[in-house]
Length: 518
Ligand code: ATP
Image 1: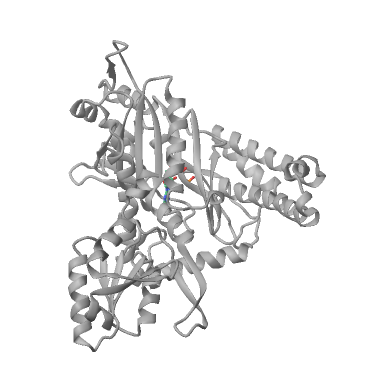
Image 2: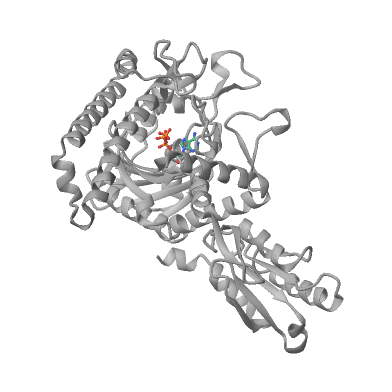
C-alpha cells in the first residue's frame, strides 16, 4: 500500500514537470530546495483555484471584502503576533546521516505506524468475518487493538503536552524511549532538540543593524489584522464581517521534502472573520461546514476529506481544526480553521498604542472583536487537485483495442485549458481555416487551444494529459452542415452539434456557477 502510494506521488511529480505544471526552482543550478515555479498549465490551474476561492469567499458573501497587503510589514508586527518569540519548530539532527528533522514529526510518524497496525488488524478481521463484521465492537474488544490504541493515545497526549509546554528535553526523551531511528540511515545517534524560528529575515537598505531588520511574512493574516479598522471604516461593515486575502508567505521549514506540500515560499488564501466576543464558537462551526462544502463541491470523495481537531492549540487559539486530505503520502493538513480569540488585535493594540476596537451600535459599546480564521495553502490545494485528478485508465482506442491513457480529471471549472479545437487533418486548408476561425472566436470566451499536429488520437491524449475537458473536431461534415463533434474527456462520448452552439455549451460546463451554487 505504502509503495503504491509513493508510486502515485512520483507519478504526480513527474507528470507536473513533463506537462508544464510545476518545475523545481533554479533547476539549472541543481534546484533550490522546497521552492517551485509554476509552468504554463500550472499557473492557469493555480489562478483558477484562487478564483474559485475568491469568488466563494468575497463575491458570494455580502459581508466579506478583499485586501492585498504588502509582504513587508513593520517588524513590530511580528513581535506583537508572537512570531518572533514563538514561531518555532523543534529541530533535531541525526549525527550520522546529517539529516535534519522536526522532532514532533518524527514522533507523529511513529504514531502513524501504531495507527497502521490497528488498521491492519481491522482489515484482517473484516476479511475473516465478512458481512457479519462489526468494526466498532472489534475495536472496543480486541486485545491487540486496545493495547495499540492505548499506546497511541499515550504518545499523542505526551506529545501535545511537550509541544504546549515548549519542552524540548521531553521531545528528545520521547524519541529515545520510543527508539525512533533516522528514516534515512536507521541511526539513533541524535543531537539535542532545539527551537528553530521559521521566519526569514532581511535588511532595510538605509538603516543598519537590528533596527533595520525586516521579516518576510510567515502568514498573510497579520496584514489583515493591522488593517482591520481601515477596512471596517471605509466599507462601513458591521460585525460580523470578514476580510479575505491571497498572497505569498515564507517559512524556513526544517523538513521540506514533500514537493509543493511543504514549501519555503508559498501562497495562502486566508479569511479573518471578525465577530462579537462570545459568538466565536457559533461562527467557528459555521465556517467548518462552509469550508468543507467548498472542498466537496469539486467532487472530492467524502472518504478523502476529514476534520482533525488540534491536539495542542497555538498560543492565540481557543479552538482549531484542520481539514485533512488523503494525499498520496497519507492524511495531512490542507486547511486550518482557527478561533483566534481577540489575541492578535489586542496585542497590536498594546504594542502600537492605537485602538483597534469596534463600536457596536446595538450594544452601544466598544470592544476588540474576536476572530475566526480560515486559512488554506493555495499550493496544497493545487496538490490536492492534481493528486486526485491524475489517473491511468484503460480505454478502447480508435480500432476498439484496449489502450492505456493518462488523464487529468480536473473539475472543468478549474481546468487550465477549457477546450481544444482540432482540425481532422493538418494538410487540408479548408479544415484548418474553419478550425482557426472557431478557435479565434472561442478564445474571447475562455482559455482554449488550437492543435493540428499529429494524428487526432494523439492530440486527444495530449489534451487528456493536461485535463482539457472538451475537444472540438472539425471534419469534412463540418464543411457540409456546420456541425462539429465535441468529445467529453471523462466519458469519451462524442456528440455532433451545430458549430454556433459550441461557445454556449462549453461556457456553461466550465462555469464556476454550479460550484458556487453547491
Ligand atoms: P503544518 O502543520 O503542515 O506545518 P501549519 O499548521 O503550520 O501547517 P498554518 O499556519 O495553519 O499551517 O497555515 C495555514 C495553511 O497554509 C496550511 O493549512 C497549509 O495549507 C498552508 N501552509 C502552511 N505551511 C506551508 C508550507 N510550508 N508550504 C505550503 N503550504 C503551507
